[in-house]
Image (cartoon, rainbow, N blue to C red; front, side, top):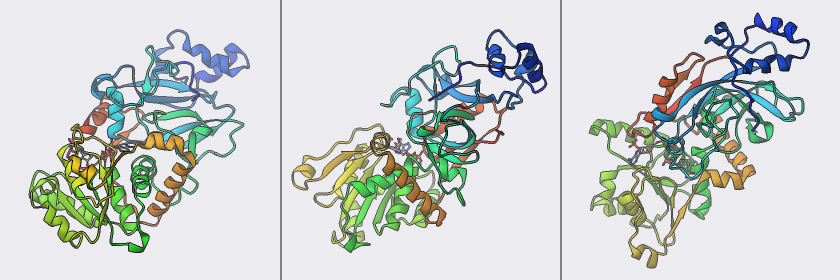
Length: 420
Ligand SMILES: NC(=O)c1ccc[n+]([C@@H]2O[C@H](COP(=O)([O-])OP(=O)(O)OC[C@H]3O[C@@H](n4cnc5c(N)ncnc54)[C@H](OP(=O)(O)O)[C@@H]3O)[C@@H](O)[C@H]2O)c1
């Protein structure tokens, strides 16, 4: 990634020409000199703009050490030079706050973006966030496939998406070929959760397509972004689903959530208490015509007793795929499931998978966007956090801090409302 070399304050339009005259015709050294010393106060105002030399001002949520987001995240202002070569300058449209983003900031996630000083911070830092939708606002002279106005997502995770503007090489980006009818929310949340659900359903089970409508998958965390995507993809592909959620505060609230998931296409929705009850075997029997309709795949993002209970419902030879650990409890399995039912226990990590299969990732994203355009893939509920140029850093970091709190009405979504 190419990043600006200095943390500069803004040059107002009226200052631009003066500087130009003072330093002669070459604009770049004139602006670079702004990095040295403290500019006049009037240059550090909160209003942002592009300087006469094409420098873009940006703010990024960065961290220089691991810890809770509220303690370690801060808003850093810097400037971005005009793009050259195959670089493009981007403006944020929207970026979600996913559980893994917070784990990364806490330092407990296996992939750790390197801490660097390229944004001009005193201490080396990383930018938070792993996915998001951006608009191209400027392109270098060698950029082949992107133009101003295009919408893009990141090719890989770990590139830092919680920033109003960024500069990247075009090779790091996936262009949204047809953004008609799509919203920033839909594009900013397509590359992690729906891709995870899609690949787990397609790649860990050889579904018998001749038995469409007669095979099942079971999953926990069914109201999560991944869970909602799995429900809709399974419905689309003729797979029935048993979906486990945690009870809400009141029975009425639980019924509302159940109805919401049924609306997406869930065949059955049960609570964790129902899953763990002695009667659940009979519930499954009733749903699957005494096992004649096999449960062939389990998707687990919770762990603990919940995961064990999912495994017990599986037909012989089936797979349980673990992709999250929200309860922080280990997955423990009765030996009989391995010996007598020959179950297979796998893990899936979309970051690693995407790095290995970049083209397939792009195709998967396009498939999901196609379903979205066709109205077959509904928006996830979000709690929008508006990010204007003047938004206080604390408002953003407290939104990030909420991410792992549980029982939320929607995923946090940073929505940038500033200009280019
Ligand atoms: N391996 C991968 O490649 C991959 C990719 C994407 C996501 N993930 C993982 O998938 C999981 C869901 O991610 P997401 O972005 O879809 O989530 P999300 O939309 O932010 O929703 C969070 C989900 O976690 C549940 N949850 C929160 N705290 C919990 C707890 N203590 N015990 C049980 N469940 C709890 C929530 O249930 P309540 O509403 O009941 O709180 C909700 O279903 C996360 O673990 C994430 O790290 C993994």
